[in-house]
Image 1 (cartoon, rainbow, N blue to C red):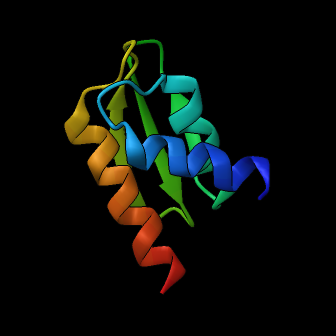
Image 2 (cartoon, one colour):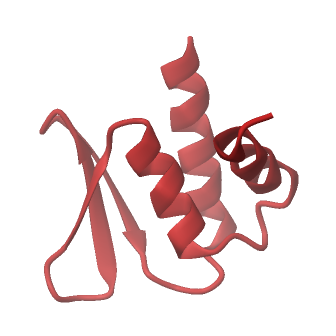
Length: 77
């Protein structure tokens, strides 16, 4: 099992305790680019179309983690 798969499994198994850096890494691995315009929120875009806004907090709120898991599952289909 690769590091990416281990990280993704850890996020899926424990969505309540996810670091922002781990979530950012997973999104960047599937092609998203994170932009911070000086505030506490990062905007992730892919192909300048899809955007997802996630606040930089530790740990990340579960609602944002679930959104990322849903995006990853849709990308694999």
